[in-house]
View 1: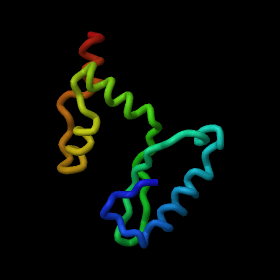
View 2 (view 1 turned 120 degrees about the horizontal axis):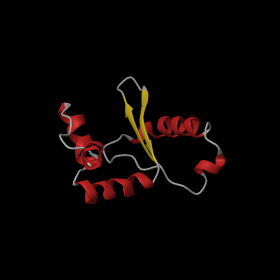
View 3 (view 1 turned 90 degrees about the horizontal axis):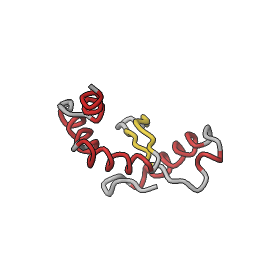
View 4 (view 1 turned 180 degrees about the vertical axis):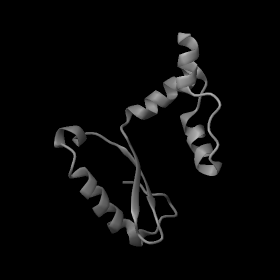
Length: 100
């Protein structure tokens, strides 16, 4: 697990225990020999809110969508988080345009 550099070390055990609880619900065959990107919010009240679990293929998908449609899932997520702005062009809108 790699937390952000500004994350306090004193909270590491809290997050590790929380992640262990989540993975306990997954079959071993799903998570064995795999890596996942887990995104979460940690509130000042020590509440942990899961926002996303992404398998490694999401990174590859993001690159493919960028090359095929000229979109940026990463950039779109940042804009959405920053000020709630939604992307004007999405892979879905491009696909619908292409399909007619």
